[in-house]
Length: 161
Image (cartoon, rainbow, N blue to C red; front, top):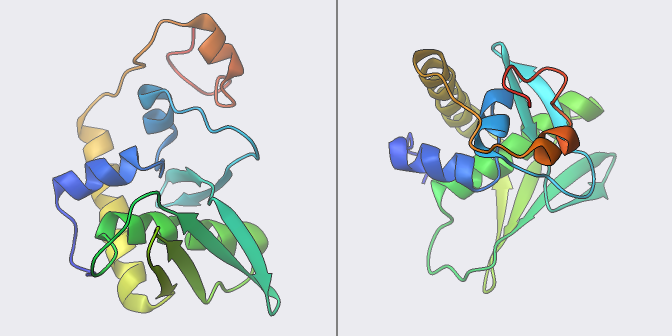
């Protein structure tokens, strides 16, 4: 746990609903239903996401991420990074310190503390994604006008229909 994730973990991180760049959001065709996702800047990248639930606790907010599977030992690094993204977003958008987040699997629950080691792992991952984004040109993966019209990022997307 807390090792720097490899390329597979980065792919899982993106695929798990953590969207780090608007370009990723549009390129992957994510549709985030319900409440609007939160967004904040980090090193020039727009971080976007929303937790499954948020509870108020002693003047702060605690993000909760539900997982549909069971787990035997420790949570996956990609799930921890996803949860930390919500911690980051809540701190930036609400202006409070978020002491921890909760990962709830079918059979276990983990309280993930907001600590410097986790922040460093998250920053290294996001910075790696920023470098990757600069190296490669991500393209929209659909030709559906209605999908573009419904996207909240259509006004800044370079590939909107």
